[in-house]
Image (tube, rainbow, N blue to C red; front, top):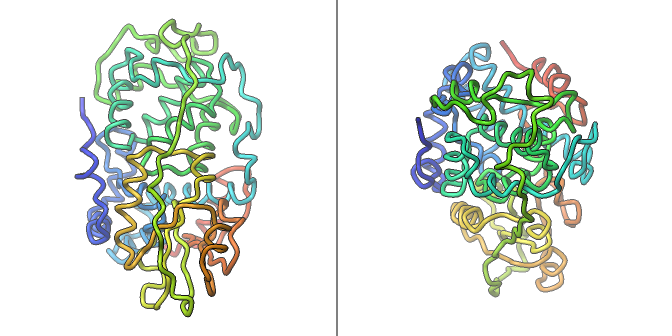
Length: 371
C-alpha cells in the first residue's frame, strides 16, 4: 500500500520552494489519476487555503507553461471548486454551519466515533490515512470522502463534529470546502448520500482487504447496521494554542496590511512601505480551532512576508492599542468585522455570487476560458 510523504518534504514553507512546486505539477496526469492515493495531485491546497497563492495564480502559471485548457480541464475544475465553496460561504455566511438543503438523517450521535478518531476502525487504508492526518496534517481528498461517509452514513454521526475534527488537523483547513463537502457526503448539501465499499477502497488505495464492515454491495448500505466498532462515541476537546502576545512597533505614518489565517500572501503590496501585521484572533480560533501543527505551519509561512509582526488579540484591540493609519485587508467571510479598505480576493474567474450547484457555477466559468 502506498503512503504519503512526510510533512516537511511535501509541504515546504519557503516561498521559492512553493513556487518550485507549481512548476512540477502535471495537470494532464491529474485527471485520470487523481482518485488514487499515488495520483498526480498537486499538494498545493495548504498554500491556496492559507492565501499564500491563489487559484488564479496557479492557473495562470499553467497557461504560461504552455498547457492548452482542454487537456487540463479537470485540474482547472478542481481549482474552481475552491472558489465556488468560498463564494458559497460569502453568500450563506454562518448558515454553512448547519444542515443546508436537507436535514441529515438518520443521526444517532452529535459526537464522533471513538475508533474513527483513534484511527482504529479495522480498515487498513482508512486507519493509515487517519494516522497520516495526525502526523502530516494532510489527507488525500478521496480518503476525506471515505472518512466522511463512514462517520456520517455508516456510524450516523452528525457531520459537524467529525468535520471540525478533520479541519483541526488539516494544514489546508478551509472551513467552507471542509464543512460543505462533509454536508455533500452526508446528504445535507446534496440530493443523495455518498458511499464507498471495500472494493472501491481497495482499488484506489492498492489494498486487498476483505471481510470488513464495508465489504458489502452498494445495495446493502441503506439498511446496514452500525458496526460495533463505530458505536462508542466521544466529545472532542479541540483547542488552539496561540503564541504569547508580544509588543509590536507601528510606524503611524505608514498604512497597515492585516494578514490572517486565510491570507498569508507574501507579494501583497510587496514594494510598498507598510506596517504588516499577522492578526491571530482568539475568537476566530475558538470558533474554528486548529492544531499546533497548523499554527506552526502558518507561523513558518508568515516568515515569507518581510517585517511581519504578530498580534495575538482581537481586531478592535489592535485598533485601540495602536495608532493605525490606513488599514488594508483581503476579502474573506470571516473578516466582516474588520474596518478599513477591503481588497478583493484573486478569483480565478469573474463569476460571483451563490449558485445552488457547482456545475451551474462552472458553466459560467467555462465561458471565460479561451480555447
